[in-house]
Length: 115
Image (tube, rainbow, N blue to C red; front, side, top):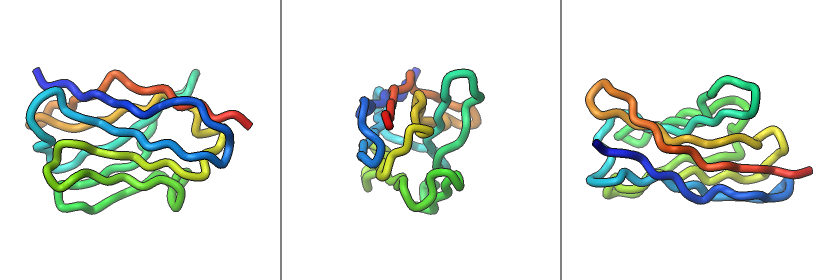
């Protein structure tokens, strides 16, 4: 079964940047839409950003103009460039894709932003 593997999380100060990556354990992304979600302690998982196979992007209002979702041309890696990070961005970040109609999730990567 294909799994998603995230990397790039870490600890930064407010105003800093991080770049997350997501790679399928084998093959490439073959989904109409892929995305990043996050879950902060005590909160529900929420959408951060999505990107379609055609390249159309969508962002949560809270990250618009600060985060950029992208993927490489070979559809082998998805990225989330996070700029101007805020303490409220602290969460575990998950990448998401689909195999057919079945959602596939990564194990998550921790992002911690200190003030």
